[in-house]
Amino acid sequence: MNESKELYIVNKDIAEKFIDMVKKEYDLQLDFSRDSIPVFEKAADTLKNIKGEIRESIKVSMVAYVGQLLLTLFGGEWFEGDVAVGVYLKTTGLGEKIKVYPSAWVEKRLSSGRAAAIEYKIAVLTDVTLIEHRYEAKWSKDVGLSEQYAKRLDVCVFDKSYVDKLLYAIMDKPNVEHVIDLNSINIQALKYLRGRLIKLHDIHPFGSKLPVRISEINKCFPKQKLVFDENEFLALLEYLQDSHIDSNGELFKNIWSVEKDSSYFKKSKTENHTAALIWLLKLISKKNYHHDIVDFKKVLELIKPENEEIIRYLATYKLKYAQGCYKAIKYIIDYNFHGDLFSNFNIQRQVIIWLDNASGGNPKKPWNDKLSIIEQICLPQDLSILCQWILAHDELRYDEENHWLDSVFTRFQKSSKWYQG
Image: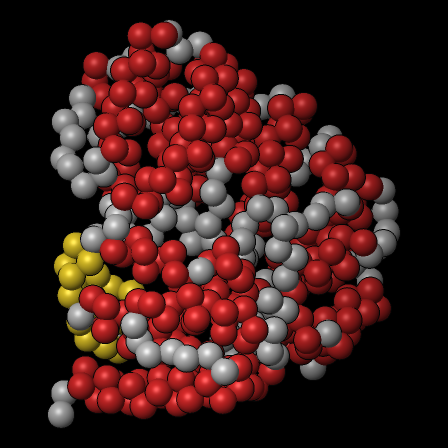
């Protein structure tokens, strides 16, 4: 028996047990049909409030049911992925052999409720034009914001119109090959296009090939660096503030690329330096989940003694999704070490960077080197208090909504255990 067939039998059995449980506990009838999808949503509304080990068991059952439901509706087969099992769907509105991970759908449905309805995702697989309807409002809003962005860049009406028509064509038919000649666009219009592409990269939901198309367009930019001056870079960051911030997206990667080409933080005046860092922190605060704190640490490392405003800003910094690692960071930022404002902040910064540097089973040279730096500026009792606090809050390892392991907080714990011996 091949792997796909074995997975089908196992998941079919688990899914049928889920059907029996839903019938027995909630008097709801599921049967893998399209008509029973609203019934599944009712069951999910109830089940999302269950916690602990029972939740994990139910989640496995829900994943099996959703997978079997998709195979019933679209045909296909189960496959064993690197992280989780998934289904290859034979024929959908998005094309053939579409790869879907039911576990990700169920995880999101349990954490976000109706905003992540399975019913809508299946509707999109049936009729791809629903993607355009759902994102029409977001696209329309961006048209107005892009108008202001173009003015800040001093892009003439003709060049803006040319770029907008190119973007409209791509959004309208994302799977069609578009002829793109960026050599005919002047530098200011290229900056305008670059900013819009950064934002639009994630504007389409799953299944669309738009991000791939945008990646291809990015490769078409002139090989010479596209240098934004201080006001233009600030305009870019302000324009991007309402972007979709996906935890696995490329928004920050693209921003740092523009910053590197422009050498912004090497040249910027103090007030512009501070303003840009605050814009970046605001973007970071909107992430829907934090798999790492790479971008946050980059911001910390760019803070200079003269940037007192941003040090004070960090004292009241709040995130949309304040998972365990950021609760620990909040504790560190609130901790009063010693010295003036910047000296105190510098200790906080070095401690956060050091805590996040734990890897492997035993301390390595980079971790020890960072600890040596901290020991020169931080009292042992202060560091011991911080480590004890982290180890005493083991509940922060898993976030409250998704029950995902917070890998950053896990590294904080590992560093704390190593330090405490």
